[in-house]
Every structure is written in C-alpha cells, then in structure tokens.
Length: 424
Image 1 (cartoon, rainbow, N blue to C red):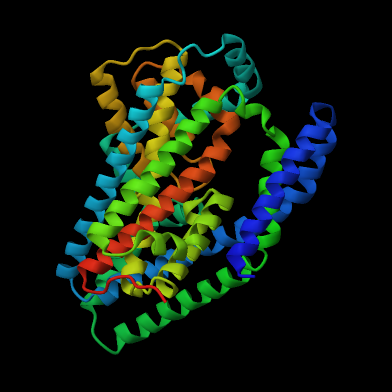
Image 2: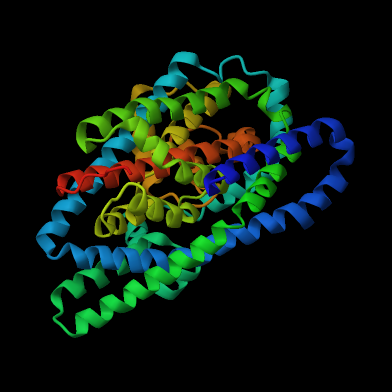
C-alpha cells in the first residue's frame, strides 16, 4: 500500500473512532477523554507536525534561493514573479466571490436559532475573547506591511515562523547568487543543494510516521465535538465545503486545461498525497515539503520553478482562506441581523483578499484576521465564537484548496517556460 493510501486509511479510522467515542461516552466522560487526548493522541500527532514545522524554514530558504539562482537572470525572474503574483491574485478574488455568492443565495445565518447562538457563544466565548485579543495586535497600515516583510530582527522572524521575511531573504540571497561568478557561486549552490537534500530526507523520514500520527490528530477533533456541533451549523459548513468543491472542480479544472495544458483528472490524481497531507495537518507550511516533492517527482515540474512558486504560494496564495473568510463574515452578519450595503460588501472583498495574503500558514491562522474584517464592517467581533467549534474541520478543507492552488500555479508557470507538467 502506498504511503498516501495508508495516511488516508488512518485518517478515516481516526475520524470514525473519534465519532464513535463521542457518541458512546458523551459529555459525562469528558475528563477521561480529555486526559487520553491530551496525553496520548495529541502528543503523537504533535511530534509529526513539529518535525514538519522544524524543517520548513531551511527547506523554504534552500529551495527558493536555488530556484531564483537557477532562473539565471533578473529578466526571467521578473516575468515569472509577475505572472505568479497575478495568478495568485486572480484566484483569490474568484474564490472570495464564490463564497459571497453562496452565502447571499442561501443565507444560512437568517432565522438562526437564538438559543443555539447563545449556547455556542457560552461554550466558545473564552476562545473568541482570545482571538479578539490577538486581532487587536494587528493594525493594517503601510507600516504593517513593511513590518511583515522587513522586520527589524530576522532571527525573531525565523523563530516565530513569519514566512514573508524568510521568503524575502531567500529571494535576495538567490538574486545575489545570479550576480556572483564561479567558483564562489558554485560552492554556494552546492551548499544550498545539500541543505535542500537534507531537508527532503528529514521530510521523508517524518512522513513514515504519518499513518500513525494523522489518525491521532483527527481523533482528537472528532472525539471532542463528534457530530453535535455540526447540527446547528450544518448549513454553514455545507456551504463552505460546497465553495471549496466548486473552486477545486470548476475553477482549477478550467485553468489547468486552458493555461497549464494538463488533464485535470490526471493532475488531481497525481497530487493526492499533497491533498491528504494538507487535510490532515491543516497547515500550508507543514504541507510544503510534500508539495515540493510531489510536484518535482510526480508532475516533473522543474525544481527551479517548483522551488520558486510553491514556497511563495504557501504564504501568499490562500484561495480557500479567502473563500472561507468572505462567507464567514457575511454569515455572522446575517446571524446578528446586520445588513451590509454594497459598499460594505466591496470592503469585505478587499479586506478578505488582503488578509488572506497575510494569513499565517498554520492551523487557525485566519481567525484573528476575520475579526478585523468583522470590526471593519460593523459586525460584532464576538460572533467569531459561533464558528470556533467547526473551524478546525473547515480549516482542513481550506488548506487543501490553498495548496492545490499553489501546484496549479506551478503547473501554469512551467507551461509558460516551455517545460509543462507531465505524468508518468
């Protein structure tokens, strides 16, 4: 059995085991269940996740710097960079409109049971206060973006896994390599190649424990919440996943066929390991090693292109996140009876696109930014507590959309460079 099949099987087993545990033990066994999750399943899952997070920074730095250096000159880099960013922006805007369209047509927040709303706020009120507290630390100004890209202390950015400064440093490093001459540049490239290979080996080793770690991660989520939390929020969850499916099956498929020149069915089949890893980790950053490996080995995308586009996409291309944020803001507005004008909805689109780009590629990274959008259009920020219980489930889905969009971008850029993706 292939590794990704083992991971998928483990995910299903963990999900079913968690739901059965929740149904049979119920709330009366929560202390014992929490002890089991906190001391057995969560540690196993976290070991897997943290091994992946540990290697993300050296992998991003080596792959991106090498990718830029191997592109050869600033003219090629500029063309590829502009095409990549435009592709990211177009996908993000389309995803946002899909989310807004669905919530406007089906209006899941209208006639929401006030008793259910009160109970959700009671259960997740503390969590919403924490999210709101984190959002207050973010103030979007010109200096906000300057600080996001150019922090005063790059070492602190590395420790905090702030990927934008790391990506900028990698780009600058690669650009400087294009201006250097042998033998210095050759030795630097050999060092980066060695670091890249070392990182990939660590990832391969880590993925061997994924069939055991993934069911542990999923068990914790499903055992705590079961199916209960889905009942009052069922329409909302269904709409979000419908948006994910539309964006994947329609938008990505059209772009793959027209601008990347590849068969969508073969493409999705080839990147199955990426999608399974994304779903189980809920993190674009943690999935990045697998994304690069599969893109190079199974899609045969040139390393210089994969090494440039994919790390950039893991931070800047958040299609699933933008769809989710836009839909969620209007859903919460409907629950509180706030009718947003066309101007306010346009503001939601702009804010959603901008905040999606700045979202951390980690589980729950979009929540503080949703609070910012809510506050901007006059919707009570405390409403974030209503959806906290299902956010992890939705996070898993939107991460799949995010990383799949990154790979479609790499396939598109590969086609423009005369090196289209191909399948074995």
